[in-house]
Image (cartoon, rainbow, N blue to C red):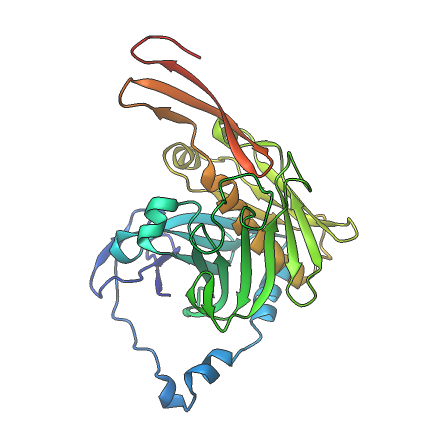
Length: 346
């Protein structure tokens, strides 16, 4: 994973696959930045480790990220884009302490197959690589999401079985390979969509520890979200532990500025908040687990959002998406159509 810091706004931006000297625009402020000459990585033979030994060598990554999250009451997450191989547009997340002006905690870059994302998004397979901004090439965590070609062929259907339930698994370290076929995986938590029988009309995510297969946390969201409702309402997913205690919440934020409103209208870029104001005793491990659920919330719910307005180029009919609702694991739009060649509405 390769990234540089924008000289204008300070945000981290991915440069994977770009040659040194290439000028790339910052996805946040559009300022031009030149890709520098990157230092060659150290070969494994130079430090006397075989590839398998190198992969198993680990610092205490969980403590590193957990300590960063434990030191703040809120984590602000800004989504943007970066260009991967073959001009593949991939998601890029920046994590800040408290708000967008706070300390830069971490960067997360998506890695996915160009063809699968082009044809199957948002139900595609991918990995997310998390690193700290001071050393973006040192990946601390790998998030794995299996898509429709990796054992989850019915992600767009009702959540009545494992092949229909969305999930993201958090691994420690820089785990190589494609989602569903990782080399030497090191799982810590799995954030899994609850079945339709467990939660029919509210999106619910269970966070399961890979050590003992117990549900550590559950996050539950609203029945209605997305569409035009995003202009004035935030969507909150409350987190509770196994005993029902409050552990904070994950919130998809509504626009706060004119720039936020423009991004909401013209793109599918989102902003999130992890909030621990009323649950300051939430452990570092629980905060890391909640971050995993936040990424699943984005891909399972808000990447499916069809936006607020669509126009049919053939008949000129405009469709206004009032909101989305959750039913048995599916995201269902509620919209109104008007205009068109027959000048009718519905």
